[in-house]
Image (cartoon, rainbow, N blue to C red; front, top):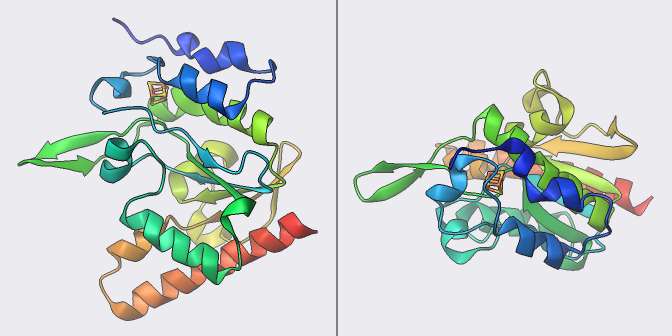
Length: 211
Ligand code: SF4
């Protein structure tokens, strides 16, 4: 079946007041890009549906794909620690990804993460728009470059602009590193530096949400 970006069911649900549960159910039937073919299941957003903070990552990973929940793998453990470090509780957050199906490539018997292409991000964005319309967060936190550039444009650089409060379509966006960057760091010092940066940026977002 050819992919048809106009076929994203989120487009017809926008403006209908659909709940997160209704959106999740509809996303299970999404075929707006080819990623649904090789993924186990859609991984929709999860958390408090009235959260002041919406955290937006890139795409589900291997563990998330199998379990059907966002940020439950190793990067999720880093994120949970950083949230606790920033004094943010689970009631404060709704967590999702820009792309809702796992893109991967085989290596031996492993499934290796493959960064989603621009066409996947574009095809999937209506789901994020629908989540934003339903949750109405005060502050959006983009975790990593894919999420930040999806919202703020291709010229956005997380390394230079992380932690800044940015006005985006009437909402406040703060971009920070993806928690997986902490896991990829080779040296303990670098790992500590990145972990501290993540906590610092989440703390900024939490303060903005509380204002
Ligand atoms: S990645 Fe997004 S747009 Fe593509 S099939 Fe999955 S839910 Fe639909």
